[in-house]
Structures are given as C-alpha cells and as structure tokens.
Figure 1 (cartoon, helix red, strand yellow):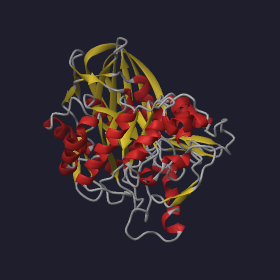
Figure 2: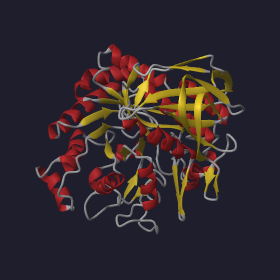
Figure 3: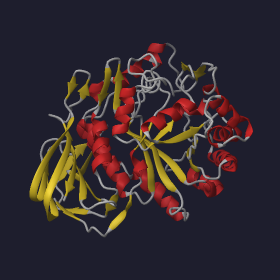
Figure 4: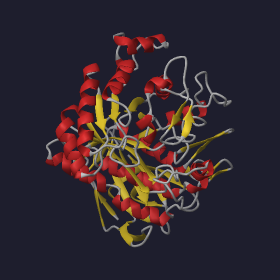
Length: 492
C-alpha cells in the first residue's frame, strides 16, 4: 500500500485530551481499584501507588468521574466532609460507602497531573445542586459551599474547568431519563446557573446521534455549551458476555466514525461546528457486563445481577482485538481533531479497563500499551494523508454478514515542537504481514510495536504475552508490519 501526504497539508493540531480516560463507581473501578486504603500499595490518601504510576506513564490528560449511570442518582454532598453516610446506589444496586468523593477525586487528578472532568447528576439532581457543586469546587470563599470545602481542609479552590451535564439521559436505562424537550430545558437552566457561579467553565451535555434530541438541545442551550457528549460501545455485552472474536472485532472498526460524522454534520448544519466540539467521553470496544441491572425484570439474587460482573475482570478476554480496535478508534479521533477535542476510554481501571488490579500488583492489558505508544511517540499535528493500492481483507460481522476493509489503518502526524514524522500503522489482518510504502525514503526509522504471538494473546497475573518491542531501520522507503499489530513509526 502506498502512503501519500504533504507536510504542509494538515487537518489540525490534536488536543491531548483525546487520550483521556474515565472511571466510575462500578464494581472494582474505584473501591478495590484505584482507591484501596487496605492495600500494601496504598499511599497516605488510600490511592494505589502502582496504579498512579501506570496512569502517569500514559500521561492521562483528563479523567471523567463519577459516572456513568452511577451519577444519575448521586448527590455530591454525601461524598464530602468528615462524616460520610453510605448510600444505596440505585443504578448498580450496591451500597456505596461514599469514602471516595470529590476531594479524593481531585487528589487523584493532582497526583497523576491530569485535568478533572466532573459529570453531574441530571437524573434525580437539580440545576441548583449542579451549580452548588461548582461553588464547592471553584469559588474561593463566597457562600456556604466554598466555606464547607475550606472547613474540610481545602483552602484553595479545586479549579475544575470541565463539567458535563448528565450522562445518557436520553436512555430508558438511565435513572431520571428525560424526553428531548424536558432535557433541553434542564440543560439550559443548569448551564445558566453553573455559569453564574463560574463563567470560565467549559460545559458539555449528554447527546447522541439523534436529530430531534440534538436540535432541541442545541437550540435551547447551545449558547452555553462548548461541547456535546457522545458515547460508543461496539460489542455490547450488557446481558450476554459472549465476546466478538478478533475478526468480528475488526469488522467494527469500519463503523467507528458513524455517530461522530452524524453529529459533526448536525453541528455544521446549525452553524455550531466552529464553536462546539465533540467529547467522545465514553468509549470502548466491549460494553460492560451487568446482566439484569438495567432491564425491566431485575435480577433478584446477587447471583443474578452482581456476581456475573466478575466476568469483566477475566484478563484472557482482552486481547490484540481490543488493542487494534482501540488504535483504530484513536486514529479516527485524530483524523477528526478539528472538531473532536476529547475522548475518554471507559474505564481506565478494572472492568474493561486497560489496568487490572489484584492484591499483589497490577496487570497492563494490551490497550494500555496502545495508549503508551500514541501518547509518548505520535505527533500532535495531524496530516491529511491517504493511501492507494490498499490490500483488502474481509471480516465477518458478529450476528451475520461481512465487511471488507483495508488491511492497514494509517495515520500520519508531525510534531509542532521538533522535526520528524510519526505514523500510526494498524494491521487488522490476523493472517499476514503487510507493507506500507512511504512517499520518500527516510534516513532512519524507529518502529514501536504492540503485539503478541497470536491475535488472541493477552496479559494476566502469570503471563505477559503482549508487550512493546522496538526496532530500528536505516535508509528505508517501506515499512512491513506484523499481523494483528499496532505500530508507531518515527521517521527522521
């Protein structure tokens, strides 16, 4: 396949926040995940130092919290102050001790050096409750909520710039789901009150690729919004944990941009594409497994609805399929960097996350290494590249049918602060290597590869099959990449 690009023909400069992450009060993501005071790895604040170190290595730029579905019945004042009252979490049907709340979350963000991004309760919550949360976080001394923060031991404001009004409030599964007109009115009043507290906020609101929902939302509240939020999980496993195979997962990569392009088109049609950006603030190949939780007929016993969630933490499920899909997703976000300013992998710890915790340490799943490559080796200037003579591969769709896609998914980037180029090259093909011909001969190339012995390779407590390897080439005009691999090639 022949790659073409010109260094002066760019799509834009990508925002580092497209490599963001998400964490929710679901199963072991918070308690027993990043926050575990009883762990020998815990620091003075109960945060696991091994997890913090792993998060720093991939330079997490922004972390969305506390949900997710959890937030739609979460009242933030339960999670601050010296006395924490346990509450029954009606979204996930467990008791939350509220020992990890706003201040603990801010400590987590400060320790890994990322920007906080708080999602508010727009289900059972109110516009006033949302704006009170902004008061607690951002006002210096004014009002009872800022004074409460100071009394809790935080004299300086938390300075939370990014806020999302609600989570999937369009869905029947969400607590406090809304109709489109009801939603647009709530967002308008919430955004208005939140901006009255802090005019420097950047606000997003829950949306989807639905024309009626988005038009009503943007007409009512578009003047207050800097972002619109969309989500995507391609292999939905909510009820049945039968995962798509590697080849079925590759078929999904052909439809990553479907919802994104629909929302982009709507923003353009309404003249908002230069002012409102897209936050893809929940995404993953695999949907979280939580059977009999968001259904009309609820599970009665914990074996019906709670115990099955442990299946999310079976490390053998997370293979090169997840790695290659994730890399293809990030390629799409980069190619749309003129309108996508944020994306949040869901979640970062446990469940379907890229970091798995156990009593003796952590496991870095294959997706973790993809973030390592993209964050630490790709450029920030996205070039308008294209390929010819692409070698096609046909993949079966889960549930029937098939799709034919190019074997290689290629992204070309440059650096705003130094010379050189960097290419992301994903080989979807699980059976054969493929060669990418470069537009000019590079004097030197360094190739970083995420791969394992097979497309089903995975990492676990007792195995480390998927790793990053490095090799160097000189005087090269073409790059050959391994089957089922993710590669970043630095060219000099």
